[in-house]
Structure formats: structure tokens, C-alpha cells
Amino acid sequence: MIVPEKKTIDEILGSDRIKYSVPKYQRSYDWGKSELQDLMEDLMQIKGTINGNLFLGNFIFDVSNSQNFEIVDGQQRLTSLSILFIALREHARYLNEPQVQEEVQKFISTYSKVRKKNAIKFEVSPNIKELYEYMADPDWNGEFPDKILQKTVKRQINRIRPIYSFIKSTIKDFNVDELSEFINAVWDSYVVVIKVENTQDVFSVFERTNARGLDLNIGDLLKNYILSYQDQTIEEKWPEIVENANGQLPRMLKYFWVSRKGYIQQSKLYNSLKLYVKELDGDETTTEEGISIFIEDLYNFSRFFKSSNSLSFENKKDWLEEFNLNELAKNEDYYSRIGRTFQALKLFRVSQPMPLIYSIFHLYRKDQKSKAELLFKALKAIENYHFINNVISGRVGNEVEKLYAEKAAEIYNSTRSFSVEIEAFLKILKTKKAIRAEFESNFIDTVIYNAKNYSLINYVFDRINNFGAKGAQYVPIYRPEIDVTKRNYNIEHFYAQSAKKQYTEEEQEFFNQIGNLIVISRHTNSALGDLKPFQKIEKIESDKKYFGNLRYIDDFINKYKTDSINWDFDKIKARSLDLAKEAYTKIWDF
Image (tube, rainbow, N blue to C red; front, side, top):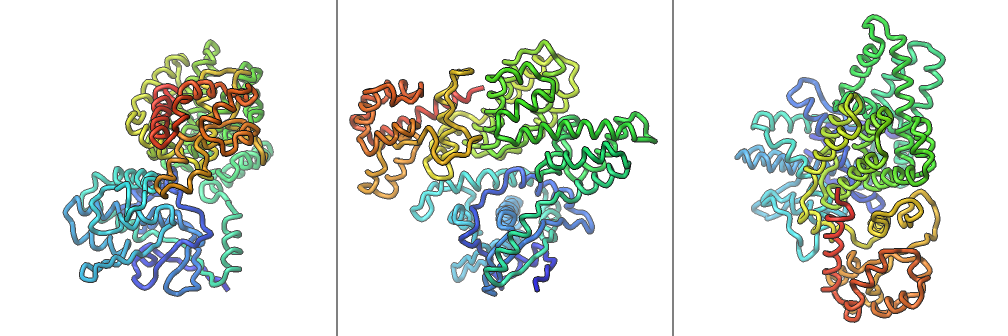
């Protein structure tokens, strides 16, 4: 029988007897965007309070090996906590508190200076292993080297450094007492641990715990509050609101609030929504009318939330019609452009702009004199900002969350014109853009050929190929809304991969750089095969059918036809840098 146990982080990572590791079947570490900020905010709230222990959810451990527990569920949280401990240790060092350093280090590793051993408590996912263990060393100098033991770790840096930097920025002003309070808050945080001892139990428990996806806490509280009014219309609307949230009810409720009122901590949301209902009613003693207005507003927002999470252009068209924006809904180019921005944000795994985007549409609807092009300019700026800052430069997506929340409330409640509000917002957003040098170096390291990046590469070439195109001029390369095994366009290595075997492992990385990639039609891809670069250009130029309606191919041939005769790693580096410069100054400029 499986018996859940309540365990604190102190009890889990504070023990020298047990080591933790990530089993091979687990996905790589990729947690730390919006989830990290939620965790840090919750910990900040309970710091220094009495009996304010934070619940961090369920952890499932395979305890078949009594000295090495494998993490079936909880890897992302435990990894983020381990990176947090490193940041806390470094802040203790900054405050010149060696005793605190040593205490925190015990939750990272068992260190012996005499034996020159640093036994890591938690063997993290392979995608960050070398860098994490490098940082886990108590003598780490705070720098991020390009290589560790001759292995390139740039991708690991792109994964860990933004998370580590965000934590450091959150705790940078702590004095010794505040640091101690925060460390205690982390130690006293607790989870429900479920232990399993065989493969069958591992997967059955894992599937059950992850299949339930129920919205607890605020979702249940609000449901009980709403249904207490026993209004049939409200009772009919609530299930559809929950369905539109698609398992993200707490997030949707927060975004609903942010779109109207600005930033709020999740813990304060429920009481604030109750007060909002009274505000809508206009009478502090009764809320019957207020609850009806609230449910109608929430239902309308839930339709937007559902549409924003859908990849379908038709879904955007339907929502625009519901929102009485028929000018946009009746124009295929218009709703397609809106749809492409939402597709991009979903690819980026960025959701923070959603309340702001809703408010932008709300003001656009109110100001009937607004021009659609300014709306598209705003949406494109948001997309481009997150591509530059988050996808490429590796910054945490939450760095503009409070700005977005502030502007969302301002725009939603504005009495000024749409153009005045949008231009003011765009001016501020431009100041937040990562600098060119930061973008260019990261662009070359990030947009590389691998299975995980197929969608990103297609997106990049889609935007390059269609820069400035409208309506029927647009030739879609990135099409996540269709589910097919064979797509019209394929990623092609200009210097064929078959030549890799004659080079060292480090040199082989050049083959996958964006400077060696083109996207062409599937049938052209088959025709080119393993031809040499200059032969590929000759083949493409021999018949217009090989262009596959892609306008950027002309530019590519004009620029690199001569170079293709002696295409080498220097040429690949040069083209990679050319693309990075064009990306920042032209394609994703805003």
C-alpha cells in the first residue's frame, strides 16, 4: 500500500544518507519561467511569518535503491530549489557570512576540503548537469565558462543563467536577518512524498497524479462563492468558464484581474475578486447584480483566453466576431496576422502578455476611429520583444510582467485615444529590449539545428521570408495549426550533414548553425540530396520550381553564390552573424 508522507525540504535535502537523481525517461529541466516567479513570491510572503509553511505539491520517488531515490515527479521544482540554494549561498558569501554559506551548502552537496570531494545531493537532468555541478562547488567564482572539462556548455548556460540571475535579483537587497528568514522559509516548505518501489507502481502513480489537473484553492473557493447565489444562468455559465480555462483556471482568473486592475499576488486574488463583485454592484450590502456582471465579464474573458491558447486562425476569427470586432473578423489577412502573433507567443511559452493584449483589444473596440495597423504594430512589438529578450537572449519572461500589468489596467480603463495609449506603451517597451550584442551572440547559439528546435527554425525562416508581406503575399513556413507528418517545407543543411564524419566533434557543431541552414520546399529538399553547396545553388537556379514560392531564396543566392564554391566554417560563421544582425535591426525590430 502506498502511504503519502509530509516532508519538509529540510528533511529531503538536509539528509546525508540519501542522494536524488533524475531517471532517464524524465524530460529535461525546463522549469523556471512563470513558475519560478510564483514560487519566489510565495516564499517572500511567508518569510519571517509564524506557521506560514509553504506547500509545494506532490513529490513521487522511486525508492528501489534505498540510497539513491529517483524522482518520478517533482524534478522541475527540486532542481529550481537547488539552484535557489546556490544563489542563497552566494548571497551569504557577498554578506561575508561564512557560517550561513556552510549551512546552505549542506543542502547542495556534502563537501570535504580534506578529501577534495564534493558529493552532490541531487544529480540533475543531463541537459544542465555539468554547469549545475560546477556551480554547486562551494568555491565557485560566480562565472559561467563556455566550456567545462573541454565540453561546451553554452546551452546549459542559456538554460540556467536566466533563472539564477532572476533569483539573485530578487534577493539582492536582503540583509543577514532577511536572508536567514528566507532560508528558513525554504527549509520549512513542505511536500507530500509518495514512495514507490517498482516500475509498475512508478508509472501508474505518475499517470494518476498528472491526469487529474484539477484547479484547487482559488478555483474551488470561487466556484462555491458563485454558486451560493443559486442563479440558474450563473450555474450554466460556470462550467463553460472552467472548460475555456482548459486546466488553467487559477492563471485565467489572475489574468482576468490583471487586465482590469493591474498586478496582484495569487494569494490575494480570491478576496480581491469578491470585493470586485461588490464594486460592480455599486452596493456594499448586496451583490446579486454584481455577480451577474462579473460572471458575464469572466465568461467573455474566458472566450478570449481559450482563443489565445488555440493555434487555429478560425478560432481567432470566431472570437473577434463575438467581441464585435467584425472589421477584423471579416478580413482574412487581419485575423491571420493576429493568429500568427498568438502562435508565436505559444511557441515562446510566454503567456504574461495575455491580459495586456485583451486590454488592447478592449480599447480598440471602444475607439472606433482606431486604425488596424496600429493594433498590429502593438501585437508585433510584443511578439518581437519576447523573441529578442526571452527566446534568444535567455532572459526570464517575467521581467516585464509588472509593466504589462500596469499598462493593461491603464489601457483597459483609459479615456484617452487608442493611438495615444499604444504609442506610449511602445515607447516604454522599446527601452526594455536587450542590446544588440547580447542578442547576436545568443542568436547564433540558440537557433541551431536539433529535434527540439524544428519549430523555432521554421518560425525564424517564416518571419525572414515574409517580412513586410500581407494577405496572399504571405507564404507560411511555420504552421503549427496543422497536424501532418509531411510538411511542404523542410530544413536543409547547405553543407550536407553527410560530410560531418571527416571533422572533429567540435567542428561538427558548425553544420547545425543557422548560417548553414535554409528552409526549402520538401520536393526541392529531395532533389538537392548530398550535393555540394555550389551545386545546390546551380540546381535551384536551373528551374523556378525549386524556389517553392520562397522570396528569401533570391536574396540568399545573391549574397552567397560566390561563397558557395568554397563553403566552409568561416562562411557559416559569417552568414550566422549576418542573419543575427538582420534579425535584430530589421526582421524583429520594433
